Image (tube, rainbow, N blue to C red):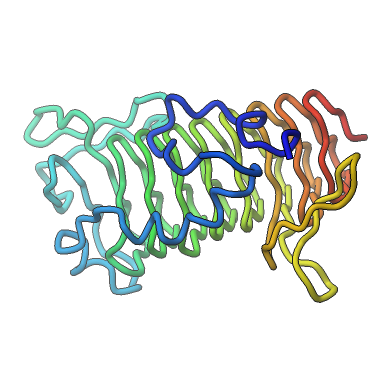
Amino acid sequence: MPDLDSVLFFATADFAHRELFGAGPAWTPLKGLQSYLTDQPYPRELLRPNADGRPLAHHLVLFNDSLLVADDTVTIDFDDATKGRLQVRRNGELLSGASVIMAGAVLSGADIRLGQGVLVESGAFLKGPLVVGDHTEIRHGAYLRGDCLIGSRCVVGHATEVKHSIFLDDAKAGHFAYVGDSILGNRVNLGAGTKLANFRFLPGNVRVKTPTGQVDSTLRKLGAILGDDVQTGCNSVTSPGTLLGPRSMLMPNVTAPSGLYPAMTVLR
């Protein structure tokens, strides 16, 4: 299945979790995602007192494997985290690489790991297992449902739901998106209201249409595989088992039928 191989969709040499992306069809990393996340190290004892599913009462600062409550000695500059501009100071001293979980965010389960310079805004709901890379923003109202691997400099935006999915570095789902059982390549950008459907109405596994016939993914749920630099327009939809090659575009208000699309495809 050479046209389905993940190397045709993603450049993973610089991705911190590149070991997930071995040989096989582009959706193969989803099959190993749950076990991979289960085996990751988490600061469970650090987060456990605050990971009970209730909104946080205070801003929390993660710094050098310690958890600080943002009291009067702490000042936070809530600038663009994806550009490394989130800055935290304690008694005037810069805490380089500190991450911030704002009051009102909800942590459900202690198997959550945040990289450096991460911002989790008020109203976000984070359920483990979850790994988030450096300088990523989890914005107000975001819902991460578990088994999610989010790369560096990513955005999970307002009213965006993510479930059992992978974001490679610089992938952004900024507004009102649904991302289920999907992979977003490097620098993918989802327009507001994009929905990556993952479940067929009819029984059976998701099958991917290719020029040489249908391929059984062996997955009951499979959303979209979006190669590097794919762009989707506002209110676009992908059907279960949609594979868009790198630099492809899905225009606004368009539904992509399931199937394999080569690089630089434009769906209107």
